[in-house]
Length: 243
Image (cartoon, rainbow, N blue to C red; front, side, top):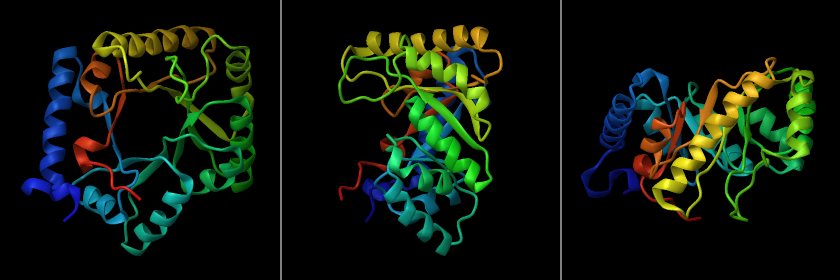
């Protein structure tokens, strides 16, 4: 029995509960439900869990590791799943940019100028345009990756992005700190929104439409603070399957 079926709950049951919570958060924030995308975070879960989610109507997924999804992509093809849009939402090592550009529909964790340049080269070789988000680090936690908003590297990357024509800049993403409670979480999301507004004015050639922020435990706060995409894993798939 998979986690999605624990205690008699099917994936469709959990999806309905998550959708209801997202809709409620949107109403509370004075936003439409259509203004927030749901990304199902399927990392560590098998390909048939993705297939079950697709059957329930989910089309957007997030995976953490290149090698893990490379295997699942083959299994999804064998299952006949063709309409799953899967983005990389984990840290990407530079030596895996070629494979990432090939198998993912987007990379949401661009965290350095070097990585952006490597993805540009990889996507250009494939003859494709790769959607990307810049991952911004807004906490002091050493384990978290991302660009520092005040760094020279970030400024240079923002200036260079229009030249990286094989990349399609879509916006920003961040992960809230584990400590600090609701106040710290809200401050993090609010800061990303303010950065988006400031950078949109300063770099008019770039698209900052998307704000990817909010996970199973904090997506309601994220929606209140302007998130356009919430990344939900545990609330949909149950606890991660350890490997």
